[in-house]
Length: 45
Image (cartoon, rainbow, N blue to C red):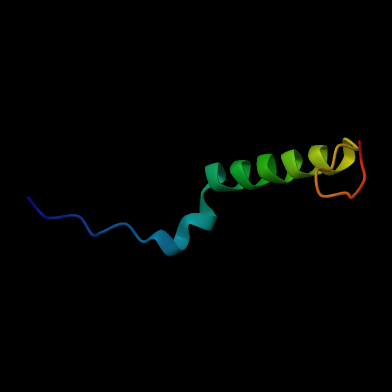
């Protein structure tokens, strides 16, 4: 049996699962910023 080559992690950006994760992170960041509940804003109580 021929051994398989180790996985090349440099090509992860070709995976659709990676891009789904990137889009979900960007959506979460956008929702947080647009929710007007920014914890870093001074004097927001």
